[in-house]
Image (cartoon, rainbow, N blue to C red; front, side, top):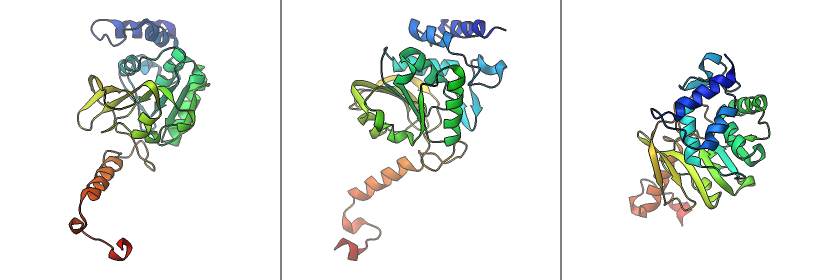
Length: 247
């Protein structure tokens, strides 16, 4: 069947009251324009509203991508950072909305970065810059950003991402461990808009691959909590102190 017809049918279903995840005309038009075939190798699954897997990373279902896009609420000309770009579909839709040169994207897995670059090129959005980076560190060379989208869960908003937001900017990410909430925040990180439950894989840390079990939930964030706990203790409460170094 003609992919244009398939895209229209897909978006029609996302706009229908049964799902109602596409609400704005601009996102509707962009999702009707961006092909999914370059991002989902199985043509039969490209326009089905279900997630897939590629190189150990999750390919978002169209309804999940739509929820993220609606929450991000980009405006024409916005500078946008996509963290955890995956296969690149969401970045392509954002590029359709704001222009490819206004979109930077990062992923910690180099294989996924190469995949996203190739997919975006094939789809006609090769102006999107995709780099291999630790997502929690953002992409400071191109900051500040009007919008930052994180396609992975974190227990707390990464401080570097908040710091890279422009005044009036918006960070959207799934917050939580076992239970996650799609959340939008401003640069101060306090004014939180909660946009419903979601289920995303946790952000990876440096040295991990997308198909490994240990994620930042058990390394970066628990390590940070342990360091904070150590700093709160008095000297006599420490389990071990090198007194020669302490003097």
